[in-house]
Image (cartoon, rainbow, N blue to C red; front, side, top):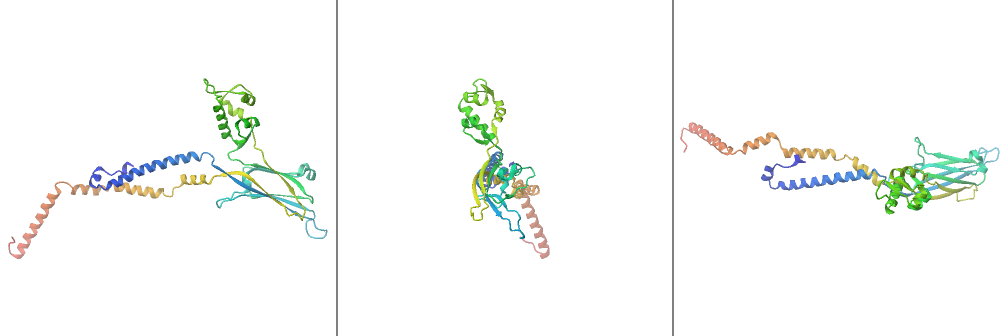
Length: 339
């Protein structure tokens, strides 16, 4: 910034240059504001920025009856169950695959019909999992089948279900570990459970004594004691009837569930931080500005030379001598004396 400041002699010579100095001061304030906002955005994107959306799940099935002998077709009746879904009012062109919302999916069929070894269909997320738009299950059968779907959402960051006693106390059922710790600290603070003299200790009230099993504990012991009170969230349970009745028109069922997705604002924040679109142009303009302010050394030497106090007199003498020289030459050519 110091390289952009006009020298005092320029400001004295050109009063209008004050407008430039005002712009320079405004630029300094603007740079400070942008730098502060960038830091705020960097801190904000470290935390998950989520928004709740509705995921509509479609459960449907088709039935293929067997054909009489001699015809080329299925020899055994069978049905196929399809589980698909999509976000309602999904913005943007990039749509998330249905499986990306889940950690696992279990379809439990009638055990009496398909036996203990063939009544479960399971899908579990792995590091190499390829996302898909839906799941299909095909089995032989010509009777209606009761099935139960257990869907475990893939929360990011992970969420946990609290012990019922602690959940009632804190008013939190299922949340992230950070949110649970925050709710626990607020309860300790509001109920003044922190020891007045030994700040690293918590004096348990009767509810804490029942839950944590001790009259007193250190703050550093909370994560370890809390780990035993956290469980995996409950799965979403959907009971569905697979119909093989050809006259049944209601073979598709819809269910809406709440899911959390990344807020589009987070992508805009990352784009702002990583954007270098105008950086090269700004750098080029700043370089030109500094060159204009500092000036060309050769031009500065010439300006100083011509602005020296003795220059006007020297130039006057030089011009006078040239005029006299031309006068003498003219007199010689004309043979007369000019006065």
